[in-house]
Image 1 (cartoon, rainbow, N blue to C red):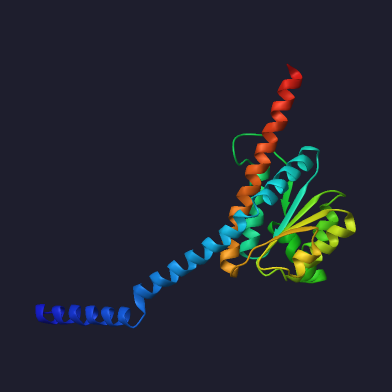
Image 2 (cartoon, rainbow, N blue to C red):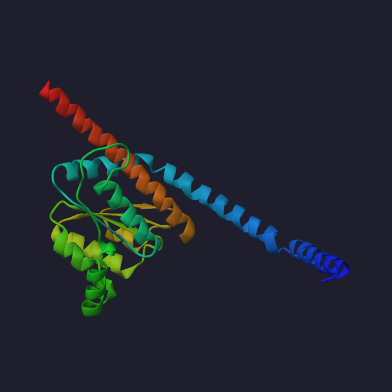
Length: 226
């Protein structure tokens, strides 16, 4: 390419870029979309912040139950499934410092069970049948849903009630079918992507309260031994 042709090409590219930005497309539009998305997330996080005591109560109750030998079952679809696994990983592994392992199962993580149950009983039953298999009276079933309307989570809430387990939900705007079906719920006003992002904050908030309660157990045990 000659120097003249290269300069001509560069000028055309620059002119097109400026035209795109002026017309509301290209990098300028992308930046504006991202800023709007983050602004919307901020509003959801403010709503979640108002649930601080609620989340703290969940974390402490969960710690009391698991310390007594109980179990947590967690489920969600899509991105919420990832957060379900995130929560159980923090409980079985660790979050804020070393401590013993606790029993927690992400129902969406067992691909063989999910596909077998889905094939034999239909997708609506993929979590409910596992709840009936694993949950015992008093166990805690945590259901994550941005829509609050997923049929398989509604069936899981019903199965929890059948076996005497407690059900909690984190959902998008409420009231919605899942928040009504569960024993307790936190409903967040926002779009599906923003609610899904806030689920991670909710998971970490519960873990913070959980581990703080576990440290209380350790302190009490140390005092009793001294």
